[in-house]
Image 1 (cartoon, rainbow over the protein chains, first blue to last red):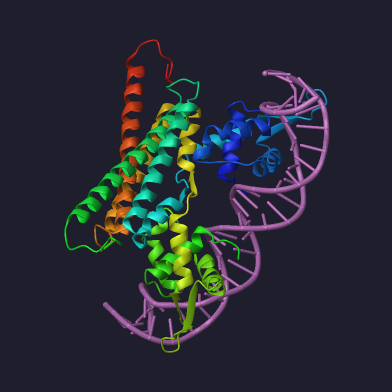
Image 2: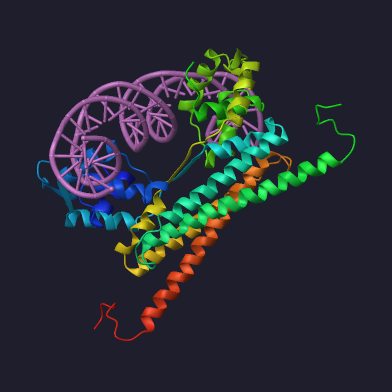
Length: 189
Length: 189
DNA sequence: CAATGCATGTAATAGGTTACATGATTTC
DNA sequence: GAAATCATGTAACCTATTACATGCATTG
């Protein structure tokens, strides 16, 4: 009776929400929970078997023609576990952001390279916003899943804006320095 | 000549910035890079040895009395590798947010429990903001490290605000429903 | 003299990705 | 008939955390 990992909860939650196969779970996570909790096949298939062994889901072989296919449904026990988790206190929050790490150490760079780093990051976030907008979920705007999509768009937009602002700040600082005399930032005589 | 992990870069960058021992690196990350790139002793000590073997840092035993102590400095090769990484394109961005996962599935809950989930998340972010303010780094406001701290405060504040807003939205929706007649949300007769 | 801080390290474990292997069915 | 999609699974690998083990030095 070891306790479940968050990845197991995603799978459990999606089965509850109607996802049937491991393949379907992967497809759905790739366009929904992916940006805050991804899952790979290497996790999904073994985890479905574990959930089944624990009695939280029920699997049944339902081949389509010659294609083997195992369909899962959530059990009452699984629904209880899901609800229990949702009301439990405490949640893992873990961010791994190599770009911020680069910004953190960017005093090592000259101003041009540092600015380029910030510019790239701003552009990246803008790309993510565009991607998010392209996968706008076709579900009720009052559903919690839609709310999370809305959060994702807002967060990425905020990030793009913050780095655009930093970009302006660094440019201004740089121009300010360049126009002041007595500086030897330039390589030319 | 395998390429470095971002954790190795953090260590390299901090040694460059003046951190001398593994212990010091851990102390610094715990109050600086921790929220976007943490490091544990289990990573730091073996990684320092690997960096040394690769010629990116140099270690020297400098015991303090009977306490063994190994002091590291960055090498020219290490400085090159650090600079190279900083200008390289592409950076890992990985978020694991179990709270968002709960929000994602919170249609499973009744409105009171869902609201509580959002309230807790808002309160948590507010606590993080307070913590960030308590570790305001005593360094120049023009340094890149200070910029990252500023970003952290702004990000956590934005999060607290976003969830405060969602909280208001859910409360309003709930009150709206409750005041409308012909509803059977109540368990009492 | 007790608690805290400085200091180093490893072994077990967990959690996850990537690459590989396989093959039918549907759509263009 | 080619390409995309549906479908399942595993083995090797990598990264990282946790818990444990050790012990001196400093501060209150």
